[in-house]
Length: 555
Ligand SMILES: [Zn+2]
Image (cartoon, rainbow, N blue to C red; front, side, top):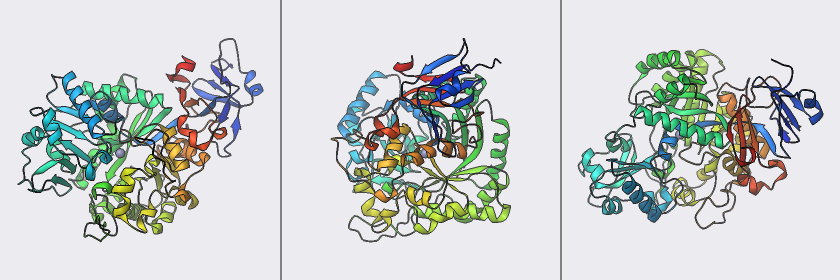
């Protein structure tokens, strides 16, 4: 290796995200690692005849973004199916579904998804409009958060779901006045139809991963934690990762969170140990376990400490669903912790958050402190008493900031049913930071946009990015005391998520010796108005100094 750099960035705004949050103008890269960080003069001596020099012309250079909770394979797969994510209204969904069905006559099922609950009265679409355009072909379309599915009569018939079908313990069939299924299935009830759909082939899954990876790289993401890696499901994404690792096409660094099957018990732990030992390849390491504790607020399946209110503001008896019984949860987390697994919780509402923290506490008491970095994703409703417990238990808050804004789903389907004062406990990111909690961030794509700049925009402003709602509605900031500053938000999406992935010693900041996982953004975010963060674009993404995405300015 020569002493000269392979690559040098000069004349830029380098935001290093090192411990001092220092800035620089230039960076040199040698052998895939950062060789120097400083002023242009500091890297000039490393520029030799073969060094590629990139004049940033005032653009911003950051550590590559890391997404702490994302579903890239199903996201990529959906991009190739009936993709409703970019649309907002019932009419546009039906048009897209018909066009997709016409364009793919050989596909027996219409699969895909990404509709938004706020496009339908009560958040629950009905089968009839689907039946009108597709009377014979079954349709199964999960919504954008993946917690409810829109189905037609043909799909219900194949699954044998009728008025006599009881709700499963972990889900609910939306019904008409006569008790028959009306076209929406929630949570565990989705499986009644979902398990009848044809599994994607291994080739389709592999292509889904490649598509998802390309999409994430184009947004500046160089590493992520896949929030569900499930070798046993009808969507075996583990196989896709193993093949990508074998064929050396996995350019991202990926920690896989192995799915905890909530219908089984502790006996599955042996299989998880076995998978961890045999399934790591290339940049993929399945070292986390995902335990899904509850659902979502909009369909009242998120686990709340006090019951939901009804539409009139009266209290109900419904406290949501705990998918894993707390005693079993404590034992499972204690054992996983003893086996050096990280636990990645889906804990959305305050009871699920408390149960996750209780389980981490049980593990800590049994096993003593370990450096596993258990993390709680979603954290939509956090009881104020539990905010300081994150730090005490060294649990990481894994935030999906894009959801922390006023929009129809929040204002009509969530706030009235949480009521006062509980709706104000939502997404308490600044409170967590003030309490000294480590913050990571993720998108939950394909549930919502994978673009970190949009998520950082909402973290800073608590208002959706311009153009993301039909008709450009003007909203007030959502619980503005919980806004984060830009530096904290960027840190969460870089070094914070790197910490969760146990990659912070080699990535997450721009410092000599670390891997050159880097992103170039078209402007200095600190010099731009905060309400324009989401308008910034990623122009170049690198992993170990190799280009994995180049926009027009660099191609
Ligand atoms: Zn998720």
